[in-house]
Every structure is written in structure tokens, then in C-alpha cells.
Length: 324
Ligand code: DGY
Image (cartoon, rainbow, N blue to C red):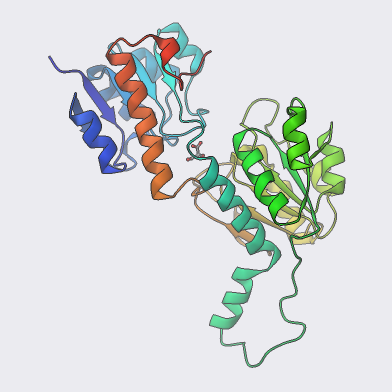
């Protein structure tokens, strides 16, 4: 009997086709499996699960998946999956590293430009019929060239941002659990800050590219925000809870920092009410990886891990399995 795969919601069709050539594939409706109980009810029938970040793959879900051999997340992040439970029930976990570096790095640079050059405020002004003539003092922003970028999390995406920032004439500083390879540091001309405090006090723009862990939860809090220069900008394309949104909203409303761009939120998909009204703040719906090429590559990588596990390929040959 053919193995059964659940893809929890529609993804790029070529990925679905690839899996359908080998297995019986069921496709969930958008949003249905954002509910733990819906997963618990249905998971028993499947050998492999291809879930989205928004699906809570809890211990209860994994325990209910009696036939489950692999969960291949449609994302590089996997904070929606209970890794301990997966290990306990001998279920392999895969993510999608590498393939979203360029789209996320490009998007981050786009957000930096948009906040520092006040693009959305300026567009709103124009649409509101206020653009009557060229204004010498209208919408003065800051150039990226010559400014200092502080990167928190110097993995693949952080490094991709650093390369682009350097090309734009920015000075790169970073904070990471460990210093990066000296050759890479030299290539990027990047300066290591051993504390987030040090990085915050000297950066014109801070951008977050760290995973969400116990250590990074609310890493950007009231103390760090108070150390940032008054015109500094915070960019978050990592995970919402890395930032204490209540403190960020206060800093934006008080003008104690210059602006922010947020692609992820603490209680996603909810937007903190005070962030809804915060000035100089761009808010996007978790789309940093949303280019066609990247979303297809994400799906293919997840599908390959599923095929590898279900066909009995040695786990050492499946590059994107997460080792607990
Ligand atoms: C990820 O992959 O973790 C991104 O946040 C969504 O693509």
C-alpha cells in the first residue's frame, strides 16, 4: 500500500507533484491545521507530515502519529515542533536551511531602505493629496552608506545581509554565540561585539537573524532599546518573541528610537495594538522568504527529506535532518 503524506496546506504545485508521483498525498485547507486538535485527529493516517510554521507540532500531535516516520517542516525555523517528543517517538525532523538565505537577506535590506528613507510615510503623504510641490525639507531620511549595521545572529542569513550591507558602504558589526571564521570576518570587514549591549549602543541599524531559544527570548528588551541611539532602527525578520513588543512599542511612541521594521510578531498573527499605531514602523506578514524560487526550493528540500526517509536512505545522507 502506498505511503500517505499530509501537506497541511497548499504549497508550490511542483513540490506536490513530486510527492504525488510516489505517494498518496492529502492537502489540507489553508489554516485548518493551525489547530492542535485537528492535527491530533488526522495524523494517525500518515507516514510523513509536511507542516507549516503556523502548525503546532506538539508532543500530543507527535504521540498521536503512530505511523509517522518524518516531519519535514516547510521552513528553516522549527520552533513549532517539539523536538524532544519527536526524538522519544523516533520521528525524524527536517528543516530547510540554505535555500532562503538570499530572499531573506534581500528582504532585510529592502526593509532597511524603506524605514531609513521613509518610503511608506512618503507614499501615504502623496496619496493623501499633500504633495503640492517639491520640498527641500520633505522626508529627510538617513543613508545606509557610512552607517553602522549591528547584526545579531551571524548564520547564513546574517552573513548574507552582511555581504550586501558591505556592498552598500555600511560598517558591519555583529553579535553571535561565537565569533565567525577569521577569513569571513576579514571578508566582511566585520567587528565582533561580545555583548548585545555593546552592539546596541553603537549601531545605526540593528537586524535580528538569530533563532528563537530560551536565551534569545526578549533579547531586545527595555534595557537594550534604551541603549540604542535616538535615531536607530530595529529590523526583525527572525522570530517575534526575540523582541519584547510592549517595550518596542513604547520606544517607538516615545521617539526613543528612530524606527522599526517587523516581519514577525510575538503573538503571530496578532499585531500588538500599540504597534498598530506606532510611528516610523513598517509591518509585514512574515514574508521575508516569499519569493517564488525560494518557496519552491523550501518545498523541494522538505520533499527530498521525506522521500529519503520513506525510501530508507541512510540518515547521514539526508543533509537537512535536525540532529537532536
Ligand atoms: C522560516 O523558514 O523559518 C521563515 O521564517 C519562513 O519562511
